[in-house]
Image (cartoon, rainbow, N blue to C red):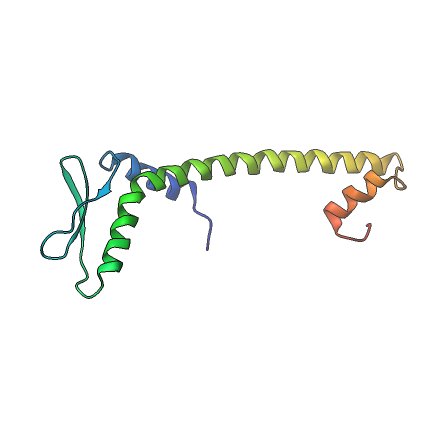
Length: 125
């Protein structure tokens, strides 16, 4: 799966923010077999596949939970992106430290070997 672009994430966020307020709930099954999803005073969706009541209910639950799940996932993605930036900066600092150790000929230290393994694999460079 490809990573979502910032444009795609922003579009998802805009859709989530402009949707009806939650929480959304699965209501009572209507007499004609429809699973109703809604919130106070608003029917959000009706799910019906006449040959599979369990699938109807599961799909309705998915829709109902999307109101809370999507914003939580977007927030988690934001946190992960921030962590990726922080780790990238830390890796840059580690690379600089490795270079300094290399410049002052600290090849025979455990720390140098550990940093080298991090960047180059099991064998030293």
